[in-house]
Length: 240
Length: 204
Image 1 (cartoon, rainbow over the protein chains, first blue to last red):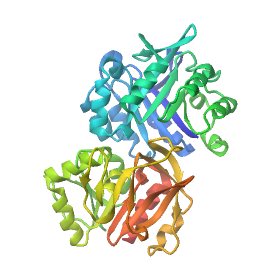
Image 2: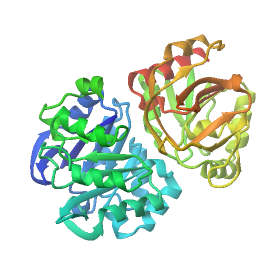
Image 3: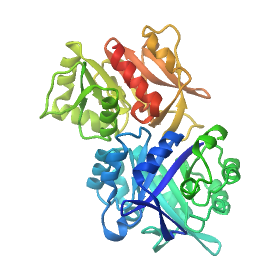
Image 4: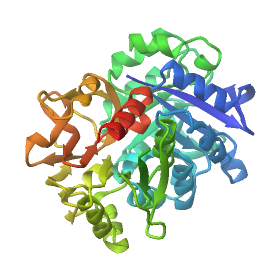
């Protein structure tokens, strides 16, 4: 399985909250990225968690510094809203961009992005929140409801085309109590033909085994479990 | 010290490749229509589509420039889409011409079991009886791939290493004379990837 280190960043600090709220500083992005690279992460995903809110992405300078010494794929997300933003991200040293809000607002932006940069480099980020027996797509780092159903939205974005989907459960994010298995089981039933990265809730090896039973070859993203040393990448790489 | 340039044709992440060559202590600069430079080794990076790359090459005159460099003995290293463009023709977004340095074509990976794009760290096998023995040490190592199209040389002798999955064999390193194509991203494959870049620069 692909094991990805996820770093949510605000004002030059890696931060982590629970359910996207109560954010706490956990370290410097360059230090943590270098550490996770040395420990054997397959990839890194960096999110600017306030970019959409403040209409900017502050990660490009950080990406430039990181990719001078980190030689694994780096994906950057948060506030990507134009072809120029994608170009800037790639020029800074990112390999992929992750986009949520601006695709929800305008699906043709996904088409344009694919056409110009190749769909392999475009990751659609989906923030899912459970609402009774269904899951709704949220944007703006868990702040805004969209009224879109997660499963319909997955089908839509894969029809338009994308390289990957990173799916974060807002309800489970930061809790380290396990992934949203109900959501993942439901996804298993619809046919998804692009790779999916599951994010939100992993705190133990058992949580990864639970995902592996459902999806043996998919990817997962770890945030707080790594930041708080509950899981170690070099050990995980021996198991998975 | 060998003089190395990276073709900057506006597609994709070229900074990582720059950084990875720099880290093995080589003189590296970018090359574009406005910044033409003499070199020993030319790297062609690239993400995007074959069609887009082919069009840019046509528009900016890179087909002629690179063909001339190749004829003068410059080592040409193509990575990912940069590898694809070394081939005669490609079928991504229509039918387009490549540099034709390696006889063969680029087409979509045909299979039912492998999700596309083929993303992640995959183990490659180096062929036996290859001319450049230094490749042997990369046998059974994992490198980072991300692609939906594959390059198929007409002459299988051009294949140095492949990624095999079930009944699929994806040429992952190809070479013909002073031309090298790499399907995966050595600049994104950690220490072993950097080692490959170092060895290619040293041994060609």
